[in-house]
Length: 353
Image (tube, rainbow, N blue to C red; front, side, top):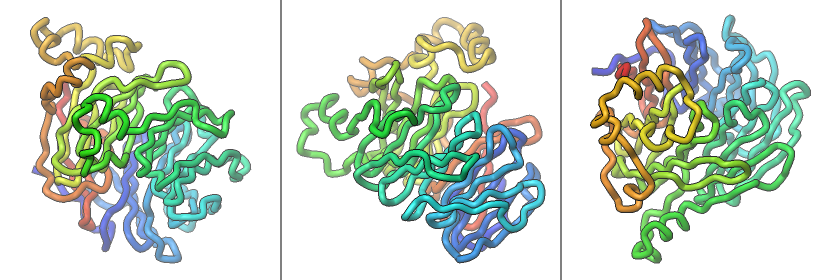
């Protein structure tokens, strides 16, 4: 049964973010922004004028009290210790922003918008230092951990791209529709539900990332050098996958869909075997697992191409279209926070192992 955090918003909650210290930020329709502690009581509220929706929030990795929020086509910088008027405001995008990402060094912010542009801002000068582009709406962008000048993006042009800030063009591009026809030639010409890419997330190792798409599938990619390869795919949602989120320091992936489900997947059996462990705890769990468990949990590329059924580790029947997911620790236990079309936030417990 979900706990519900209410009282922070009057309209639909559109985005969520969590700091490393456990503070949660939420953005909603008509310029509403709220901060939450672990008890589910609003720790601060702010109405940003004009009444543009707050569509993305991101905490600084280096300074957890610094909060970035997109407000229409603008970005505001706030002090989470005393939520009041923005400390700074800048605008480099021309259309509404869909996603914000800040690199680990807190030197660059990337803002993806409806025009397909990704504006990369130098946070010292607050000026755009690079403009990257998709041919349609750019829905998601993420910096890679341990690689402050490398980022990945996806959009409604069905493109997934790998970028380096030293270059204006992508290092590598994959079209999800082409992946679909290559893996299943019989599907060519029959794609009534094209894989528009909605969300992506990079694992803590920096070389594995997941992408959720409109066709209900989740695709896992492995980055090697200046390119990435289609490693694995599985379908767990009957409608579009609106959110994907790798949990910190693991290869556990949370997905949220337009079908109202939130699913937890363990993809460590395949993608983890060629990676340095993102956490000692993950290696301990794998070492302690009996041989049969490790074998049963192994996900390989051949199996995915044969449409083998990959089962989620946890299924949450949330019941409403998922707008955003985030994960945080509350009272020593991990929780997934879910934003939907309502004005409240749902909080669900997650397994510990």
